[in-house]
Image (cartoon, rainbow, N blue to C red):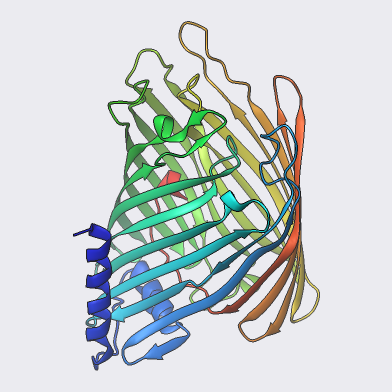
Length: 436
């Protein structure tokens, strides 16, 4: 029987059994992750017997796209588009220490004229959370079958299937210190997808494994400092035209600002995380150069004035390339934004992002890919129409430039988001350095 069908049957059976269960407690233990789990489950919007449920109806990016293919074709292809989704999250407490979590998000992506860009998407995730007195354990997996914009390198819609398994074990050594071991393995499959004569699967089908050992020190309730050692493996099918197998080694440090339980960012004044470190990427084939350099992410928000939030973001890391002339590229992006609460129900936001890429060359000196630069201006006006009902007017101006020729293409979008319901709750858990 198909593994996906087995997962669906097991998940459905568990939920049906739980409908009649009198259990109403859920795990928390004495760890910072367990405390977050208890809060997230308790704050779920709906209750059905022992179950806690979050669900929403979403109409996203409903509007006009000035170029569906962002300059990859000779002439722009404008079109009207929208994405309709129904994300559902179910929390199922089995005992005081064990909680099951299921999340599913079916979507339909519609284009008015460009028929072949229409798509049905689905993302499923299942987890078991075990909250003991000094230990927290989480294990699960997911399946995603999504047609999406692949990357800054190839910013067009490509069908990506990703099957993953993951695990986490955290030991709360003391009130202020903890140690976490994180594992994640994801298999990517691009089927028979092709663009511009390039077979995507032939370059990017792979299995990635990431292992992180993270040590935390929490000097106060709002701040966690950490050091993270990471090891990664990247296994490509044997029949690929070139051997891209690789392994990576990284060491990172950083901090996380988190509000106290139930506290809003306006009271905490600052929120977010910073992760910076050094990564070495060792390519198995001598035809490709190894790589090393500074990598990491920054995502911080602050409230310098009443009703005003400013934010800054940064990301830098190695990504595998869809082009045969390069095994990977170094992707860097940075930017910031500002939001202003105009009234209790209306807010205005503006963000500006920049990005670039750098490609290696073969040891022979051949195969250099031209890099790219891009910039994006985006603005939004958000209206809280009613409890759990929001309408957002959105607009963006994007520009992508090929470094070698300085030729530039633009893609602009204007539209709306309409969301009714409650978003999925997220437990604050240790996250691997390059998975943030």
